Length: 256
Image 1: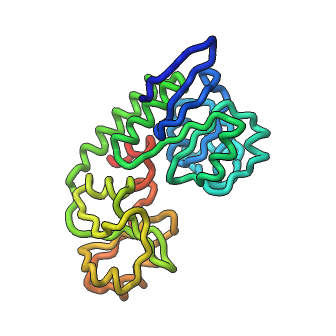
Image 2 (image 1 turned 90 degrees about the vertical axis):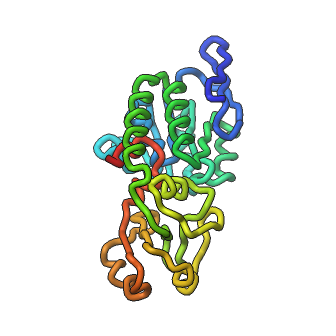
């Protein structure tokens, strides 16, 4: 699917991970990236990123020089248009459909759709081909595969992975986080899809061995653990790196 390419001079027809076709001038020279993990990967392969969201904070030092075009779910359309991108790169889950539809009227928008590690590797290889940075992409994918293979099955126990409070929200099935938890060896107790809301009583009744508190999108800290340990005194409460558990680009190589 990702290798679909009909060349007409320097024009190419691409198909994204949602099966959408678009025509781009190849290779792209002005990319706006709307997803933090993909922005980091694109910069790591030296792709020509000219715009990013306020949440695209890695790699530090390089990303700060790139203009901000809003958030992942509230684009500044005028600023994006002023950058005159020849390709915009987004994600089905992290970006909002209405905004993507508006941008697609004026620009080619390549969308990823990520649920598994294999999806993430396919995305990176595809973007490497699109940007003519195949060798750099393959090297990063190799490092990511090696790192994630080394942590396969190293964890155990029944867990709940919390991403928000007031209300409590957890990562459920049909998410990249759920896939990664399973890869690590955990059993995710939240079988409802996506990111359901939970009451304190529901969390207690599920009787998890461990509750994982993600550092993003809600910025859980060690200070929060002192409070939640009183709510669930018989359960281990652990602060975890949200970027490591939910970013599906080159950050995966940081598992080791």
